[in-house]
Amino acid sequence: MSTSERPLLLLDVDGPLNPFAARWRLRPRGYTTHRFRPTGWLERHPSVPGRKAATLRVWLKAEHGRLLAGLPCELVWATAWTHDANECISPVLGLPELPVIEWPMMFRAEEPGLLLWKARPIVEWAAGRPFAWVDDRITERERQFVAAVHKGPALLHHVDARHGLREADFAALARWARETSGR
Image 1 (cartoon, rainbow, N blue to C red):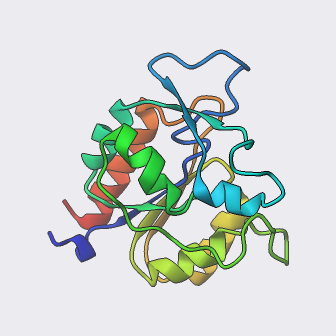
Image 2 (image 1 turned 90 degrees about the vertical axis):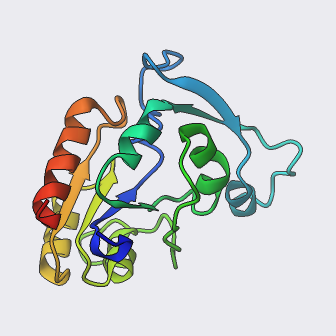
Image 3 (image 1 turned 180 degrees about the vertical axis):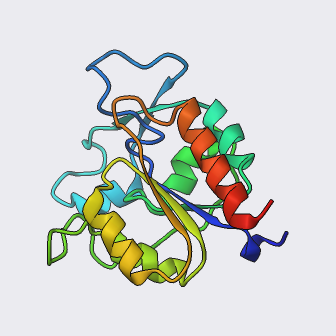
């Protein structure tokens, strides 16, 4: 099956891969601590000189890279990390450079109904292809929006930011990808 025929797996970093909401200072089992100073974060905080900017603490589980790569999907970064995900996150997980969704406007909810700022660009980027979107901020509003405007199959998979991706999440994604691709 060619890459363009496989369903897309659109990945957020913070929440699904980095369980940032886990109990303070209690790194989840199997995760390692990494410190990054992403270029995009520095650009969004111009008043903080680069040398003095605090590093971002990120917990990652290397095993997630193997599990994600094993899914019959085309992996895509759908995160505020944008290209920094390829620079910082991909190497830790052992993933190749992935396509990145560019956001026209970050961190501002859309009207009506305060739709998450990622929803409309994700649907536009997918352009009718089947996709699974993995994020900790997905609500019923995003599900209804995608169902109303996206022409292909879509799975909006919420991941608890206290735990990150778990075995049941990978099982659900694999099942959806097999059903969607007919394999």
